[in-house]
Image (tube, rainbow over all chains, first blue to last red; front, side, top):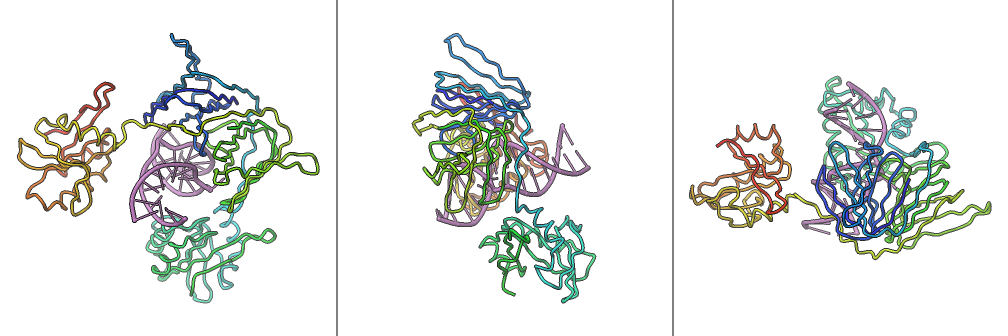
Length: 223
Length: 223
DNA sequence: ACCTGTGTTACGCGG
DNA sequence: CCGCGTAGCACAGGT
């Protein structure tokens, strides 16, 4: 890992073509060869190139005495021209980061619901995950013993209107049963999505996380 | 801009909930308050938080003598617990980066064509950009002095078949003139789009960039 | 290798 | 301020 803070110009050519005029910026070069050029704001780098080109950084000093770094792979080129280097820090890292542990992901909700479907409705019986309709797989297939019909459950972390289109698609693509209900389950059902769900006639439920026993229903659509 | 390389743990809670176990990582804190935690690979940070909470970084030393940094805004919290700091670099930047200049964007092509329409055909006369048809605005309206009729020009960076649907829509929505031609102009007209354009009877031209004088026609459909 | 879906998408633009 | 679409999307997972 190397961090350089410098007055520099940058040009990139590859998936697009961009140039960065002379300015102070930070350059981060990682152990896998990834390079990114950061301004003093925002999360995303201004320019970047991933580390397929491991060890492909070439340092060169041009005829005006300016140092350049060139990163190149088969499809892309990134050139950094240094006019002044304010700081250059190098750090060794064993490249073994155990990585991020996510909580409350869609798959975690699915996992939970497959074992605790009755929190949605006591009469629900879990049948299977990834039930294949003719228009693709829906997250959960369950059976509603009260209404004596099956229900397709689509799970999202954040549910936008696109989830409703998906649900419609799956309902339309279900031929195995004469009638089928649908239910949208998410941690966060966006306001617009609630409106549209009401119009389309699909009920929804919102879940929250309980640290002890898992998820619980925090809010639901009117019946 | 501040760069810290350290053995640390990180926890984030907000749009999701994640934890990072003890490991060596780089932390970048920017002038706008943005913070990002990087491992030694990849472009994207493991954790991050944008700088709405300007100046909201709180340093604290807990009862075991461990330093923590807490970033907080109304919806999110990011806590970094330092176990060992290997490097800590601070750099002053005037927060005025002129930013990225993109080349070959759709608007740049439009801008160029509005002044150099004759590279498409010498008999063309530029009339206006964003000409309003009944079905929405087409990029450029021109007049073909050879054929004595108007022509709608749709500009794309990459032209897919959806551009052809747009063109049809605009032609159908043009009521001001009895007859109107159409032309698709792009840096890259995809193979499938060429086929379909031929079937629909719309000509196309491909442009390339000339470093000196701007764009030039690199390829075009058969007449 | 290519394709598909997800993301704490980020980010800019229009309303 | 919020919803929407784009991105050099990045990245993980499957075929």
